Length: 247
Image 1: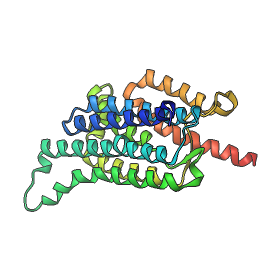
Image 2: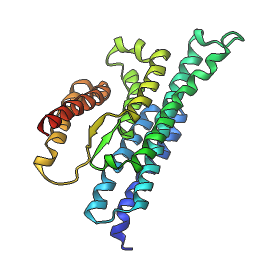
Image 3: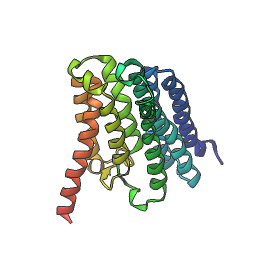
């Protein structure tokens, strides 16, 4: 096999490498570095399929490698981050001081790993779901990873102080974990963000979405990330209704 045919797999391995490094930083509580590395991994994930199509190097092996790399970068890392955030809250708040009566609270941080479990199921289902060749059903794992990873970034940026009490509330984080698990596997058709063809007609929805993303990022910085995820879901629902009317 020629070197060009291996380029997509090499890009996938860069995604995996970024995820492994992000995992180390996540365990150490270095959320800024973990966030940056996850973003880098998602960047590589965006382009591996593109180059596979350009070089006609699509393969069953490439599909599996892509999902395994995503499992680390966009599945394991956000689960660890949620675990660490809940653990930090448990250690820092008197309400979580463990006694024989409140010992059950020790399991709360582990709820964060429901994100990882749901991501695993979502990726496995994606590989065998023939409906998801040109679009997604359920929130893609990279988008979900950004949603989770944005929470500590919003807190540390401290741009919106009124949000701090909400985002650092353990009940909110537990609720977000379950919402994340649901969105990953919900039967909600979502348009794909991957560019397959250099055509305005086929990419106008993606271009519009990316333009709105830029505006939100400039205006709200890290807070823009959950807003973008919400907008992505809503825009997909609206797009589905428009398409259904045209049929």
